[in-house]
Picture: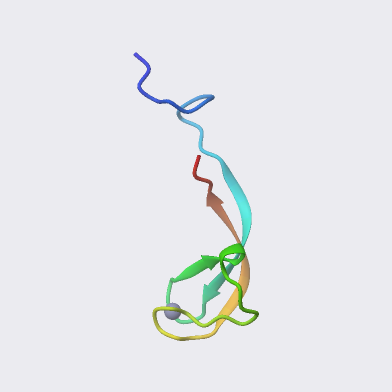
Amino acid sequence: MAYHNSKGPASEHVYQDTVIWQCTSCNCWSRKEYVSVAEPLCPLCKSKMVEETKNIRLLD
Ligand SMILES: [Zn+2]
């Protein structure tokens, strides 16, 4: 019986390379599209963040 509402096979998740800001001191990161400043600092430890590309799962 189907219990999953998403379109397509339920076992497949959509991943996409996304530009993020990654903290240089901890594991915190944010999607760049959600960050409005040019050189953000980590909201947790106030360290410098670097721009990276991360393959993250998209929410549907
Ligand atoms: Zn941090």
